[in-house]
Length: 217
Image (cartoon, rainbow, N blue to C red):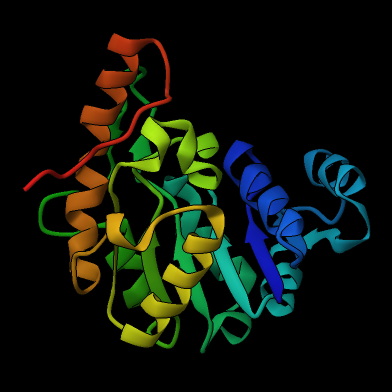
């Protein structure tokens, strides 16, 4: 499958590399045509990896991953172009973390709204699926690194078919179907995004990002 990855940071590179390893063809998007990180990533991942501006990556992908900083995600998606996004599954990995006042970060949107909802509202013809935003990049693409993969992955979105496609992709990353919890529509991104203040503080306690939440019933 042709997949567009929006974002050149640690998350975008981890997901892009995993997708190439799984046999997909991936274009990484950034604000400039030859972003240094995107160029280096493509060079290291062979002929199945390429790069371009956001609109090129979005047009290329049959499925898309939003791996951008949450406070910039809406601007990035506007640059990607509604016409390049419409009708596609967009797996939104981003979090609305605001570092403007230092550490720990606050949330730029919370309580009665979420970044996932704002993206869906701004792009109503895009099938937004919120997922992977409660784990670090290394765990996103290799969940077995924490407790043998026995922990919980949350996802939500308005379209059942889109969630099914996203879940299938995430299973190929190593996530187990029995550990996935479909929370329902995109308003549930409020809950998964508001976990992040706790996640950040746990990171401080553990001095490591290699952990994840597990729901026990």
